[in-house]
Image 1 (cartoon, one colour):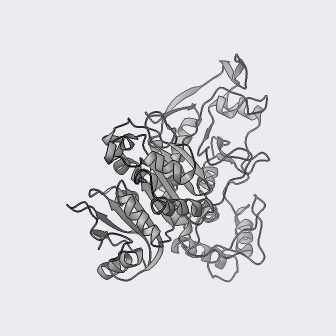
Image 2: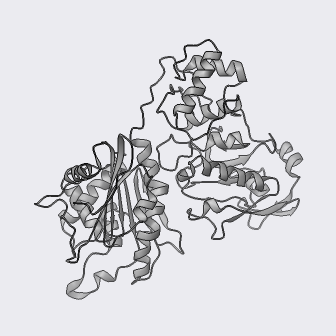
Image 3: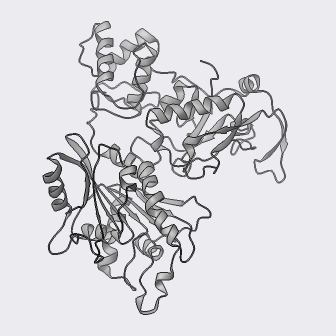
Length: 485
């Protein structure tokens, strides 16, 4: 029986089963309030209340049944297993017993005997293969501590070596507090710095890494896959500016298309929160538009409804006709920059005159991979206030969880592979999630790790263009294209 339970809310709930060495609130802090969370911890004998997966038997099914007896019946939308330290052994045994969760997060605990047995490695290796195939998400973390393998008769496999055996990857060796992330499909490994013997680094896996990885990786992935309302494909689809069919939008739909529709309705006078969730307010505004346009007021957004908004309000979308400024326009708005090639060149330049930069404090980037410790970045004087406004808007609409990494702003260089001045050198551009959004590939759809699809409509509404739809796609890149308006 799980020891601590938070019931969550709704007829359909994500269920999280967490296994820990000591009681913690970090799991509850990292998950949405609507999720049902149950935790178990070691008792005084160094065992869980019921040993998962072994004869007796505590499986995910019995644990969920116990939870529902205590908090009431509900439909399980998705299952998440979380383990920290020795708690990962409980997760491993659940996997070995046949559990098929949508997500697994194992924090510094994929250890075993020395040498490890097949039974200790296979559940993790099987989960890693499923994650590579996109069937679930598996996040493994490790520190650099290998002293456990040098304790004589008491030696056991280190988590670092366990991750190598599970994934086939050489473990990362990061510097400083920022973990080194590696991904293949939906298999993610986060490598953290530590000393050879470092109890504090191990504890931070629970207190710091756990809520951070939940918010930034696990929760967005699970919510995108948990079936929060199916989105039908229109039999006569209209086409978005990306050239792909547009879905029907209706109560329960979510994602970047919903955000764009909400922003368009707001621009037309029906003020809505742009949160990417097609809820009652969005449905009412849609029905009002349909009534005003002489359409059947069913609250479903299809081609006819989009055309109705277009007839009423131009494009029927927020300012998606936004384009990057020409070099002449950039010179006129932000000032002409004089520069010369640095030595050696390789695209780097030295700015001679015309730079107009200021430091901008962005508290929202705290904890992101690659973010400066003081949360301050260099931007053009005119771009700074717009950048702060943008991050505040992303925070209010709940989409910041999609941002995993801050990948830079000001950089004195030319456009990669070209001879023109980069917008980064002007201080009017910034990059996010570069590790997941390589240049040359379009923006991946909602639900794919690293995707910023939900953020783009909100950015465009505030004058920032994203490079995901350019002829040479650059989905990590956001650039200021409108200062006023």
